[in-house]
Image (cartoon, rainbow, N blue to C red; front, side):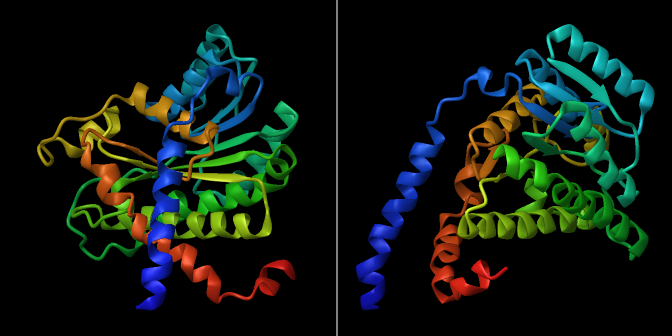
Length: 292
């Protein structure tokens, strides 16, 4: 109890100050000028809009998705909008070999990498879980495991550039949600893995930031079709959502919340978890981090 009285107030003060000042950092579009950026799942929806925002900011962009013809159109529009360069590499993230090789090819095209934006997901629908293990496995492989493969492949280049990993997740990865159990499991996995790696980067002084983006319902065609007749809430615009994701990555924020509810950030941001994570490091031997 004495420990709590002595140390809890300053710890709470530290975290409140951290969140206040980090939230008020100023984003400037020129932060992305000339930067080398990968965007996955970029043939439509949020990924497509991120590619266009990055192009307007003068970034080098490599986009990927399964549809070669759609990616061609995205790249063409990126160049029209002012991208420093724009390329596409088509393929499926169900193929882990492709995922790994894609990063290497993208790095060669741009001459390095500053930001990796992980945005793709496998096709899913809203249904009660009926024991479809294949769906669970595919969701975990595409929505989670391929993200790990891509980030591992990109890390050497990101270390050289002191770059950033931006992970697009969902409210379903922070709270229980019915009808999307396999999808939700994959999004919770992203939080567990990338938040843990972020902590390791902090302790071992690896200057590669990791931003987890927690999104509510966004008005993409895919999302609107999936929730039709099931969820009756207003969707947020994909164009603004895409910009907020880019801002969060550029400002190296730990988490970005984008939703039509003002309560999402407050209730899911969970400073209590951050405090516990901070305190838990006291029980670790730093030799374990240094020797690895």
